[in-house]
Length: 246
Image (cartoon, rainbow, N blue to C red; front, side, top):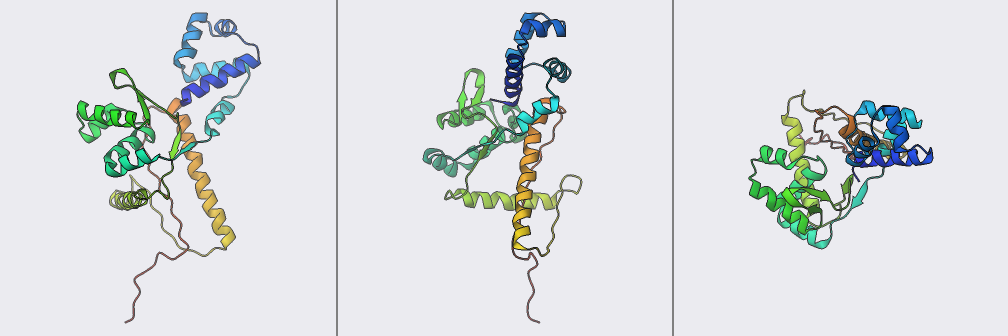
């Protein structure tokens, strides 16, 4: 279920609990009952209308958004068939990540990577064969496991090397980019083991917090959202090297 679907589902549950019918809602919104039913079916609902509905059924817009932010991410592991295919053809893996993490449209990917319609179809067909998406007419697709998804590849032979390569390339990108496009902070200090564990946990929670905020903004945030790639790293050794005898 996507974020819009989740919002609609929460509202439906609140309507049922408070015994508010579509007819009642139509009267308050000065719409026909048919229009209300269509709005709930398609999920096409403006933020102002959503706020009004929340007022009618007496739930706060914040609690509604919390239902998205507090939704646990599905952690999945690739099966042997998927693993073998992606390791042999990593460009298919990257295509899948662009779809599922950045939620880019195939039109955007075609423009960004200069892909032909035939290539797009081959990518989608391969992901369908791997049971990662369900491909329908006109190259439309849906995720077989819903969203949001966190793909866990840790410990899978081959993916560790691929991850290291991507991390190195990403760090190079951050260093090469202008300060206006990236943020980098490097420091070294001493902490107790307890505080190191605390820092690690807080970094993880901060990442999760903004990942969930992203899920909300994708539904009711600005239309021009920016891609943000985030890498956190903590080592129990100094980054200062290169000292030698003289």
